[in-house]
Image (cartoon, rainbow, N blue to C red):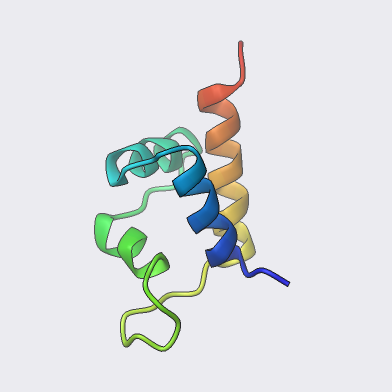
Length: 72
């Protein structure tokens, strides 16, 4: 089963999202996050600065995506 980090990586690639786009998406979901926190999510598992993407973080990301791309 794919981890939340894997799903986040695949969505980032599929939607061609840059760091600034990710910051905007998390901002729309009212979930403040910094650039170092974002890069930690995309590090290889086992890296000293790797951070696991928790369910709440993924939920906020999906909410931000819906707010950005869903027609009003």
